[in-house]
Length: 519
Image 1: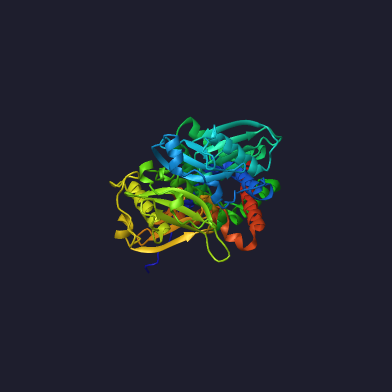
Image 2: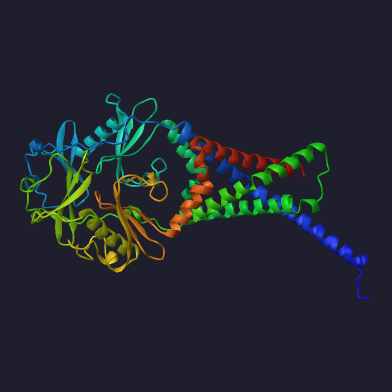
């Protein structure tokens, strides 16, 4: 007979190996759990604050936008040419019209980036105009004309209380002497609200930045180390969750049953049951968080994506009076450069019969550029793509000339175009409210990574550049970290579900800690 009979010694050897594997798996699970208990508490407890502050205790403000008004033709008694000549501004970057305190002003940006305010009616320069306008904007947004101003300061970078998510720079920080210690951030160059922070939101931002984003690590070292430490801890959390699934899920019958005392056994039982129940959430929170963190290692070039070439007064021969504007719809006028050509950029508001639009008029010939907004957005896209691809196309130079017959430039002329569209509202999936800027022109190219540019032509800025890598990470973070898959039940149910999942992870962690201490 060829039947093999296992010897007692071989069975004992297998039993010893299995016992050692069990012991090692238990030990590693405990060690991994202890290592991650503090990061888990940091992330979960600080994460609790986000839905609370974003949903149930969200601060409000009287006005969030300044609605554009039609330009009164009778108030434009001084042309931009007169103003530039009177104040010896031979070269500028741009200008536009702003209305506040019942006056119409030219807001002129010189070559240093300084904004000057000159009344269109009498040609008088407004002293400290940008500070005056910043205060007016802040009071308008708050609907507060009485509270004293504690301070006004210009901010050219992001900070703990003014995060990158707010996008707009530079901004003025206007602090009020009120019970809520309100700070209002305004961008005067576009008349937009950056954000507003009462004392409650300031506290939330500190907690979230410290314990969720781990800014304290970056403060004592650098951003690369901060992200690396976070990814390391998240990897340990994933390993701890996977080892728990293996021990308490797949191999539980092979492990020794708890037996010290009834109390310890009950605690171990709940630790096992709740841990298995929420293991998927632990993995999705940690996995999507780690994926999100890896994207933060890439340099952020978006704030630098603005095209502001110099424009001389001599390049603006035509005054407004020589151009047939639709004054009933005209809300603003600015100027842009496309190659060697200068265009007035007119913003027309909507009526019952017409949609809002931008019209481009050649400042030398008075001719209107057909489909001008798409042409200019394509031109800007070529500039920005050249910088991101580190080509010879510099953002302040001309890499291609705009064509009045074709909507193409360097990039758009060599790459198949999938879609061009003017967006006047945020899209929930790809271009959401987090990007701040509207309206924008969406230009999608048929590249391997489906590269899509969102260009704000009013400020000549790149609002967003989305590729497939960004989409995958964005969907991962939205679905698995912010519970977007629960949107069908409403925002309240979604936030409650997210809070319960995070709370359960904290409970399991505490149970594991107690078991470790008792052991």
